[in-house]
Length: 264
Image (cartoon, rainbow, N blue to C red; front, side, top):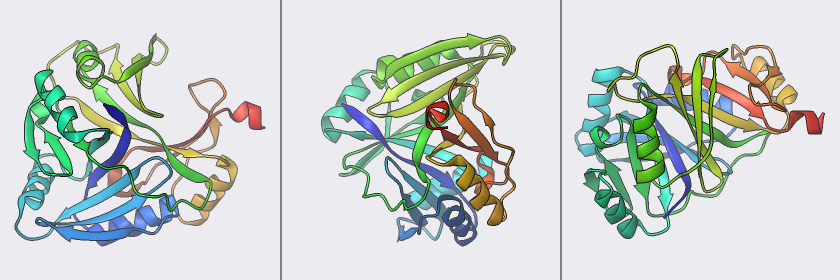
């Protein structure tokens, strides 16, 4: 039913400034879209789209974005999955306990109260063709932080039907990590081993972008004026990562090369 990730959305106050920042970060030109009380800038990569959205006049989209900005400020707001059949997928998720907050011919939005606290959407059409042209090719995974790992297992595994590929605890990091596969894409759920389990809402925890040449991308972003960390081995054996400390809209951002030891 769910075939992969479709896009992630970030709410911003200054769309033009955020779009310029992500154009430099992703090395992709944005496509503008206005309507329903909001302005948007879209970036399409190999496996996903990134939507920047800001309120602009009256309309349901603008109302939702204003409410989010008033409640939590700028940052990650939504993760959308692609459905092979939107109508059938929506009915199935409703039967599994997800409450629909809005439905159109092309998308279904679910009430965050039924998804653990984060905004989840289902899209009835595939992502648009990639505009990526450099070492940064697409999204490696989206991160969600949870205070209740069992609730997250129920939502992402039993209700959304994603494939749980890894569930591990690491006392050194003080964290439990669960990786769910949606088609060829990944959602990472992180839970602290040091905090008590609670009913606190889940929160988006950042974006990990794929790179084929981390050294070249590190140099490019440094030259573009970003504050980047040193290159270092990732937590997953064989990976190489670095952090972008000042990504637009304050979104936690890392760039990761998989199988770095094999290509070295």
